[in-house]
Image (cartoon, rainbow over all chains, first blue to last red; front, side, top):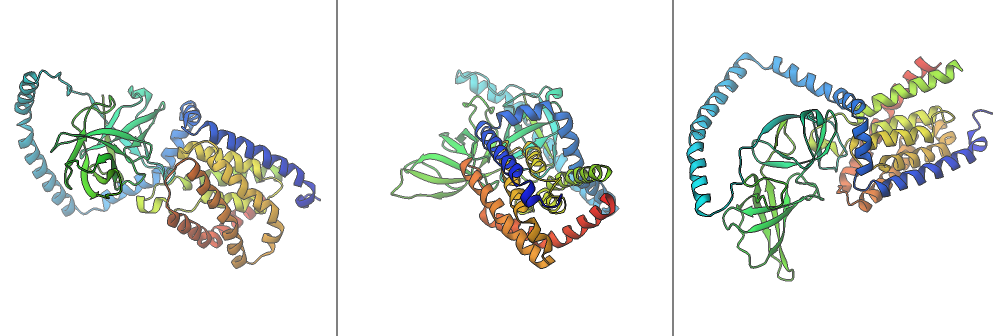
Length: 273
Length: 160
């Protein structure tokens, strides 16, 4: 009798199915912009963080083990390369105070306000979990406890990564600049013209939009943040124009931008204030 | 009563491990091709205990996955619920099949799952790659006999 689910329980199953379908579809309609799920995540972050940490643990253990497995000679080699890098970069850094002064002087001449104030930076580690394969989001280990707030800029050593889109107690979610719903205002460093850059969903390239057919754009042009969108501070590297496709029957060019930051291989990111 | 509790305890433990396996980090090239392990475990459990592990488990697991995967609430819940409903409709036939036929049945049941997720992706403007979806189905079918054997061993050990 118990096993005869096909006949005994079929009406209960059908009612359950309709109920759950209605709830799921209502949730989908309400939570299109992830507002409801953000609230749930925020209230249950003490449960979610341990699950993320457990999922990440095997990778962390593997990474730690691989350090031990690395031979001494390899480590000495790596150390020498890093020492050289630090030496070269410290040479470059020596010029920064001079450049800052020059920048201030030039801005005074142009009567423009100083937008690049010395900003506070904190380093956050990525919580490596396998999120929905097509969501362009990452999880970082800093949250409300570290005074993070919505909209903060996230960068790595090579360029812009994205912005903080959800802050929970122990972790936050960063929407990458490659997210299809994300757009920002960039500046072409060669022509100083403004360009709208939006995500494509593919981490390998972004799209420069509304670039008219007669605009001066060439492959290799560097795009930086304009600071005009009031989200990203001015002057951070976004990427390089990698492909231009002009079609006469269209109003605008199709311009692909290769992001400069290593969006998929990062271990650590920097959050700006 | 004791067996009833054992079933639920084993199911919850297996589903917890399934959740962890589902969000285990992979390289970017593999992320979109990983099989939905949690759903495969749910399929096994509803085949083994259709009276106890059915749509409620599927719905709750889906909601938990939505929260963990940062997808809109209801996305996985909808897909899981429909898939497990299909299992509940055909479980007497699937149970009697050989392992090879079970793989084929799984393929037939997973196609609607990916079809629904594709429709929802389109509705929500989520980018996806159809080739990756096909590879994910293929990998799910390939790992099914091994996963089935392992889950059956665990079930026999802890629920009887």
